[in-house]
Image (tube, rainbow, N blue to C red):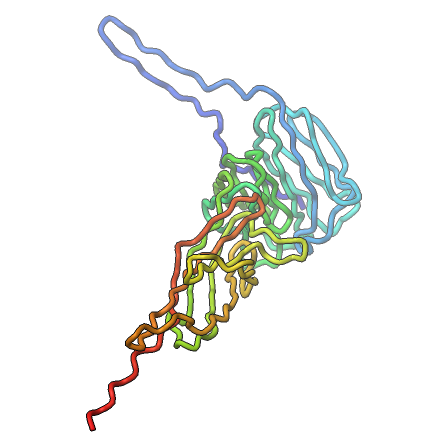
Length: 342
């Protein structure tokens, strides 16, 4: 059984009639725009929709109107070059895998750019998909970042346990068989999820590398007794590219502590990933604050000591960010009580 699908999220040739009026003048009509010029490429792979780790080798991939044909390799990959820019109809036939359906889909291409597609073939006998969703909607990600797209495919009988085909236009990165998009250069594109005769699409924007976003810093407790104690330092940090790591795999996040005498703790305290990922994670460390060593004045009053904490983080593009300062205090000893009169 062969399923056919047209991906209708690119501009198509639409006739536009424009009537012009004026004194002593006539009207004119502007016809449809000329077809795209130049050549384009399509790169992709063919996989099993019900077992996305399974590649479909030796499948026939035909592109029209170029009349170009290729065969997928042992890993299911294929490439078509020198295609006329515009809409290309791909016909994919699993010649040596009769338990999977052939598919026909229209892939929009742009001159001088590469369109990437993962074709997921439905098993023979699968109920025809009637609806598909794709999420997140209209996301943005920085160069070097990764974002995971998800999709739900349903038929009249209910949700299907299949992975859709994924199509990326815009030459801004690549998308894998499981919907993981990897941003490689700035620009805009479209990600589409396709299954049988249904599709859903969303725009995606790739922005220049941004420094890490240190959204939350918690220092606790904010006040310690004169004897000092342990301070917990927690930071929530997000970065589309991910926080960088050192040679031992430790994240490059540190707590920089300014001591009461205005010097800095050396070396800074490394912060470990406590929860989440290097893209969206929580980092934690502790600091043992020493006892207050201010000398009491002549009345026996010991001034408190204030420490300042700043979090600094580096991402994989070597851009860094430093948080606002957060303080905690080691209290001093108050003057001894005045003895009662005899």
